[in-house]
Length: 631
Image (cartoon, rainbow, N blue to C red):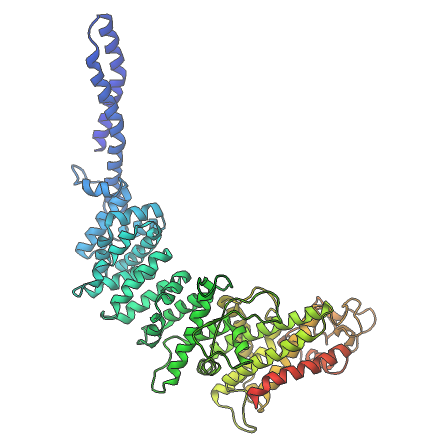
């Protein structure tokens, strides 16, 4: 074909050179030149034909070299599928891909070079859309079905992934008819289970348009309940949905029984990890106060799904013979952390009797409008937290979120106080926080420990986490974006976990009132930090009489307080060190000089009358909130 195309090129050039000369000679001889028009037509035809010939040559070359392992372009004639060439929109790579993929489906053998070529182009939307339309929905489904039989083969597994990603790239541009045809045969009783399984594998690997993913996932979900290997298919669906929060939300919110089916179904092969991630995506990604119950926003749906999740989990726990949760406790911990403001709200009242439901009640002691919040029954929420907090990571996650939320409330109280608005917000928020910490401590088995009674293993572990939270709590930001996300709280959780690893084992064995005392100390630290931030202890340079630097022992005139071995502030003079940082393990002498100096300042009247009065009121508000759970 290359030789033919080049020959046509020479003919085109010859016609272009000779036709004018012939015309001129004939005109000189006064002869008819009308027949010379045919030469020009031939020249024009060659000019339009040569690019198509080159394209066909490229197509053959691409199929034989880039998309297959071969020594080069074969000599002689090569079979060419004109119908496929048309479906491929004259694209050499699409033509080659369809041919090689169809051959692989028929033989069960996949050329590594074919896979590599597809992987190279799976993010190209133009290629992906053309390939999917050339294959057809039924052809793609058949191809994925055939790969199931050979998925232990490394190249076949790579092919499955590449096909899924290519489908995802094309999904936004594929027609509804193509999408519907993809799952058309799943409604037939005789369908091979591999058909639905293959499609689920494709969804698992790609990044899809939300509407496409929801539509296909629902069809596979409807079919899978009677399918062989259904738990694995369900797991693959959840993996796909977990990467697309909007699709995950629509999947669970679009069917009032969908979440219940998955939370009461048999456990998936991954222990529910993919289901947990999909639920986290559906409940934690979108937070807003837009829309209405009649026209719900994504934030409204997030809160509604969260309320439903806690309610369903509580129902399962209430059935004594029921098995454990279908999702890991870390998932529940992340969801509780994301809605920590609502956990605190429920801790101060009896909760709502109508669940699942959504509330639009704002915290009056925080600025701005709260996002939609889930409604809980207090006893149901407590039961779910109690089961969840058996897992150390889940408890740590919630403690980190509670500490951040407490810091946010106290920071706003300090800002109000600095603006001359008094301490009403400070005190009210202390009571709110006390109830929240008490509710959490009670669910963790720490609020009501009988005097002299040995802590069980779970209580010892949770007490260590509580102690670590006290020691690192000031490192968790007291302000910033809200509500928090799983990624942010994960970073805070790491601080607490590192502190737990460094604690001595006997720190977890403490007296019965340890949870109350340590929580009280944490709130006191957070309060002092908030007041320092807003300048309520006076200036740092020169230090005001109530500022921490003015309280340092052995500080002589002209000394830099930052260099004092008892200094417990960061260099800015407005930030407390964490309790971990106040303990200097590098010295051979008294390692707690900084901590002792801090306690001396905060408890010895050196922080001023304003602090003493406020501390008494804060203590009262905290105790009123916590005592309900500790008594």
